Length: 412
Image (cartoon, rainbow, N blue to C red; front, side, top):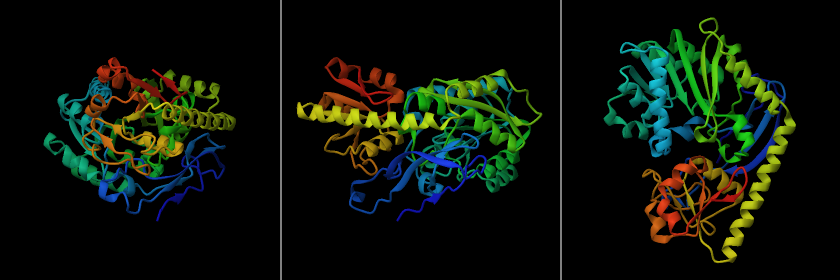
């Protein structure tokens, strides 16, 4: 039985005027991969519907799944991608230099995952602390000898953190902020743990890139919010904080990085207003933009289903590459199962030997590709296409081709 909560008002401004624009159906939780002995058991599904707030422009899910159902055991690890690993290592150095942090400064990473960013901070000589509810990831990173609070970050856990570790000079949250359902509680916790003059740095998928790339597969239950800078600035202003710097990143084919401080503690950079104006010019404040997005997502669904059917008619074989959460949204929306896609290759040992949620496609090691040599690889992790194609140079040399599903279906 599913246990989602209907969100009757906007998470940012509490307006009831949140209107549906895309319904991706009822899907299983995107990171809840299955063992073979679980395939015939119960598997809860939840509605995956997205709406637009006519009052503040925020984009969010219309139903929320309890966080404990999604995050207490987690299979995505940052270090599985060379690109992401390098990015996080660079980020730690950049922030330590920018804010002049030293050995006496505490840095907290919320949603610290396998500790990739924390290890970078440790190498740069600051005092790192991770916060993450996933016990399996804490066990995985135990050898790093980095302190960790195994819990969700809330207003209450923030008080415990200050009591046990003190106040932080810097708090980071990379690809975590879209998960937060109680934004007031989260920001209250941030204000509790940050010392005066401290900084919150957030990175997340950027709504402007999501719309431009028709990246509907980035929508899944963990991501309850889809952030643009305009609604985010309004949110923090409501809580006595301010976005003081913002930039677009190429990582994941489009992310937003923001620096946030208490109002009056930091000088706002011109980048903030420039990005907000760019969002307005791109139509992010208009509902018709999202209706067109939904239409384009439907066209991708039709085109990809047609391509896969044509390959099957001609006896050409297709496998998948990458088993990210986003891939499971795409598989579910398109109705792709193991008959159309017999297996998916993925580098993460945590996922190998398991089956995708809902669609039950086996996940195998990448070595299977050269042994089997399918005609096409559908890149479910298309945001790392360059990295994957470079890693699979031998598969390509033997005649293998790559399919990228968004912003339109194409073969590389």
